[in-house]
Image 1 (cartoon, rainbow, N blue to C red):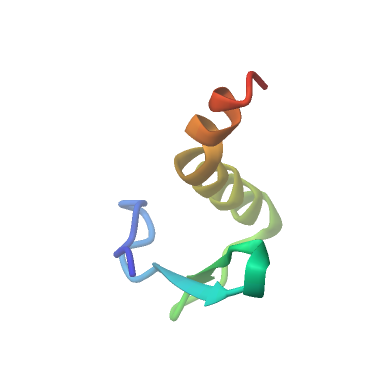
Image 2: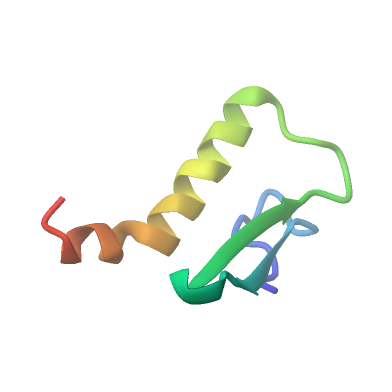
Length: 65
């Protein structure tokens, strides 16, 4: 679990779940929990983009993308 990454949304949390996927490896699921007021669609897009960058930017760079 990560505590909030955003000062404007201090109660938000990011939960990570790892699940075995047989011989294929491991599945990673991350869930953004917003216990207070849900973000509007624009803010949701911003939160998703930021998480995507934090979690996967280096992985994409390792494949030359």
